Image (cartoon, rainbow, N blue to C red):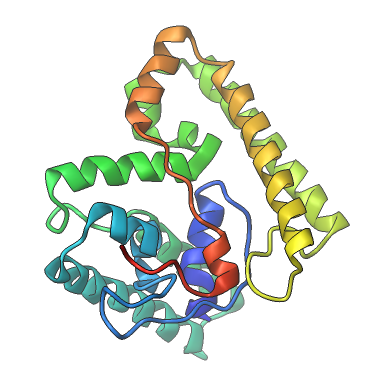
Length: 235
């Protein structure tokens, strides 16, 4: 179960879409050509982030220790016959929260931490505006926060409607043709762009400029790697 959940749910929580693709686990070290090398580390456990941050072998080892502990905890909860379905859902929600807020303070350098936060803001798309630290840093008013929440709710409704029309919408693993994958990608990109523009329209010019500074250089998750089941070889 964790193979399916750890990163897919993190993407969903980060403003992406719900995916149910089987993801391979890596036990060969940081240089292996795998998509996700730390199932319980959320975005930090994705190959693109690992490579761009130039994580050292020591950093990778530290991340995997905590990541494996997170995964073991949720596996234990999933197998515990004493838990009710509601308690299992609660355990999963707690697991997802832990992966999204993976502890990096004693692992990443100051420079890596800055870039990782930028990556996370890019990965979150419009949902970045729901983050307490973003709200505080941009000095968003209560009225702006409420408007941004309404936009997020409308986004969720649109995704829900697309899923009702096509249960396979957002799927990023195998079993989907290149043509359908391209159409899906274009539709997701259009929806994300439209929603982000709506959110940016809520901000004043100074807030927009500050937000772009917070995000830094663009970061985009390479979803094609999921279809290939492995990322490009490391340079």
